[in-house]
Length: 502
Image 1: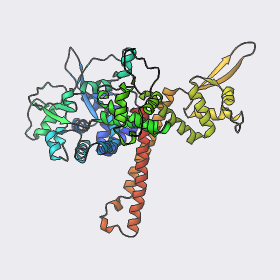
Image 2: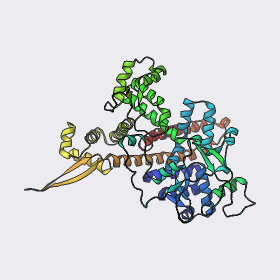
Image 3: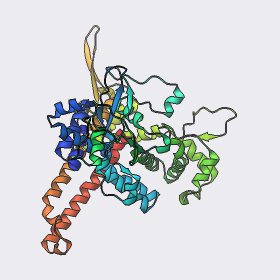
Image 4: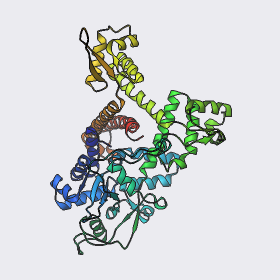
């Protein structure tokens, strides 16, 4: 995964807002240089060893950094650190995660999740006691990776069927996360080492918790482990899966109708357990009877007949799916296609708002064509009566200048040499550019939010009984501004997840 310029800046801003400048400096070094050892971190950040260690403890505690080591047959093991970009960005989604639990579970579990989100990793005892902080438990066992080549190569090719079912980790970050994942029985627990001082001796000035942290974060000394403490964290992956399913359902609702959304939601709910084991491009195949039973379990689906559900499934699912002759009638929704259509809609909406209807029409023609088209042909295909033919190159040039189109200059040689321009929508490149713009906008909104909070600090610090007259008006103004900015940021994050997380 290649991080974008503003993606890194936005992540650093989140860490700065939550933990301060020193921690953010350590995190930024990791984000920009992929993975580093403690010694390298100290050199790049020019902070003291203790400042770097304390910063790492905080980042590990809150699931923003993962220590790991390469499997080396010779030489001492040196622990490396990698910043978990996705987990950092998730810190801005805690309200969404809490909303998922609030809607699907109960208040008690919502409170437990809130505690885990605020504190990162907690022991079972701390969860039960509702601990406000667990600063003394910020460690994790480090996964060991097979030694990588100098440059991360593409994943090995897999069969067509398996390629659709599971995403193979390709980057170091993905490999570290996969290697660090605990067994199914303690899926979201983290084991920590609790023995040995980092310097090889004991320090009477350190608490037991501090010794444990210090011991776990020393990378060049060998130490043993006698005790194990189980730490629990919020399962970000499951929340993203839930939000991914919700996005698919809402996109189908907008593209088709409410009944189609009901059927897709039923399919995803019925396959939720199976999908926990793999990240699928398609939903798990289900029989018509299984889907129908799930549909009529919901109030919105009780009026649907089996025939209507079958008709909707024929629209939602790929009719070309291969089935064995003796296999029961089964259906699997193409989630990847649903999300790709949603991405197309999002980018086209941006083009429409920023460049106007004519640019939108031209962009859509090129996007649907999937091939380069010459300037004059775009004019003919668009059939824009209100646009003069000489205006078409100007519109296309504006889109190209802002990286929304790819342009090539072709030269034809013959009796008379001529040249002409062809244009195309290169989705991987353009979609990455759109994502970076979204991170840029999210950063600006976050900075504006922080600025407004600082501007109204005197008002917000006042007790409620003193908010009278002009003060009350100022407080209401602050509330209105903050609500608009927060709502805008949450809506923008929906689009961010569409291009980055789903």
